[in-house]
Image 1: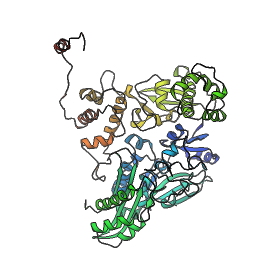
Image 2: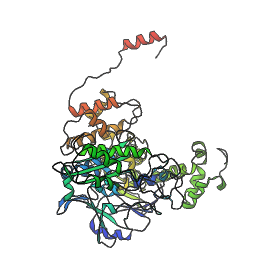
Image 3: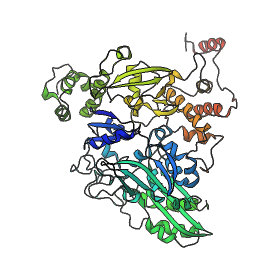
Image 4: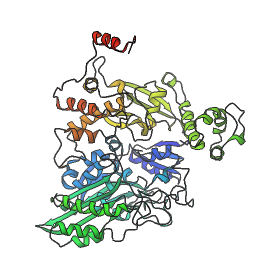
Amino acid sequence: MRPFEYVRVDNTSSLADLTAITSNAKFMAGGTNLLDLMKEDVERPARVVDISGLPLKQIQRIHSGLSLGALATNTETANHPLVRENYPLLTQAILAGASGQLRNMATNGGNLLQRTRCNYFYDTAMPCNKRDPGSGCGAREGLNKIHAIFGWSESCVATYPGDMANALHALNAIVRLREPNGGERQVPIADFHRLPGETPEQDTNLRQGELIVAIKLPVSAAAFSGHSYYLKVRDRASYAFAMVAVAAALDIDGDTIRQARVVLGSVAHMPWRAVETEAILVGQRLDPALFQRASLAAFQNARPLKHNAYKVELGQRAVARALMRAAHFA
Amino acid sequence: MSGPCGNSKVEDLSEDERLLVTDMPELAVLLHSRRDFLVHTAAGSLGVFAADLLATEQALAQVEFPAHAASAPVTGQHVVQVTFNLNGGSQTMNVDPRVVLVDALREGLALTGTKKGCDQGQCGACTVLVDGQRVLSCLTLTAGLEGRSVTTIEGIAQEDQLHPVQAAFIKHDAFQCGYCTPGQICSAVGMLAEAQRGHVSHVTENVAIPASRLSDDEIRERMSGNICRCGAYPGIVAAVQEVHSGRRAAQLWEFAPQTRFASATKETGHETV
């Protein structure tokens, strides 16, 4: 690992010092992704600012819903009674990711900021526009089984591997950011991550020096609490990245679907909302045949690569199954 | 490339290594002095290997051992003094911020019970408890432990009294080579505490209801961060289940008595088997 300067900030007064962060510094909370990438010589910060002591750990009810502190751990968040009761989709998504140890370390803010990545990004002997802009994409014509089928560019075909953010997309979460000047900015989760375009080195729309302080779950998203399901399809039963993941949430009035959210994971550079599927579902009565039809629509615009065409049929089946589980049909 | 024992010159370095030296001039001496070893071990990916090995080596060289801690001056921003509780006692170290906990424990403090497996958060062999929570010591910066409480496998037992999880691992033959075992045991101790707090898991049917009694499937899911390449999983699940449920299960093995040894020796015709 390359040398870096370690700085620990412990309280809100020292937050002011964070404005001095330069372009070659990184905030570190749980460190589970950043430190790993530093060991692999992929991330090379000159300064690491340890923010794990900042008072951003609270999970609390607020007027507009529920506020999840950026430094609450994934374990604390998934197991919080208010999350389990009102947003069980989020609990399921978090618990589908990583391992018990990693979830005890990883924080909510850090989970959102885990890198969109692939094995070419990790391998410093390979070209990668995300790691080394302009060097090319090793995966585009390489082994691209785990890569994107939506929204990719010639620059980058990596997928966002996280689970938590897929549920947050379905639940219309809002990310609260502290700006370097001390101000605050709020970003809907849908605008937080980004597609690669010509600048795949940017995973998110976070600006230089901004710090995630909390994630807000709106009251309205609790309407999905009775009918949601997170389905993760992977090579082994636990502790692996998804080949395809589905966050499905239905707001049901009698047997009619009032609102629907279907978000796909591990198919694009960011969580991918299946708006075509949602449009077919809304206003219809719960029906397995409807779920089948809607699941096909999610993939009509898919652009698979050489080795990942399997994700289309797998994804269709996963969407149908997730909807069946959300509706308590299976 | 010169032979294993040849004198190293700048032109002996690979392209990767030359770039490394440009970035980190202080590595140049080490790169040359480590030449023999590198030639033998990493012909395919020399530069990357060298970077990792030498950075680790350098970092460890800067760890101040506890005996010297009181008089060792903190030399700058690249050395961090940290005090934490370790297995019940106070521990102060001056560390290079690059040193992760597993290396500080094993190399700096001679606590070698904690094992280094993959060193990238994928195997669980290095699991320890920090403030009672199971975490991966390979992805924990030692410098960040100020005021925290660390328990390693060396601190799990109460003096001569094995922790119930340790005793159950022996009873159920929950290991073969034993390399993953310290991590498995620390992970199980942390996991059982999580279960007592009603934590749910990926295989919990209804996450709104706190989990109470763990099925074997629940234990498998919750322990999935600990890999055992010997495949001792059935024994591990049995051991953890016995401690969790309190239901005594039969021990399925026993030490062979002397008579059995004697007959085995006779059967094979060898002095020992």
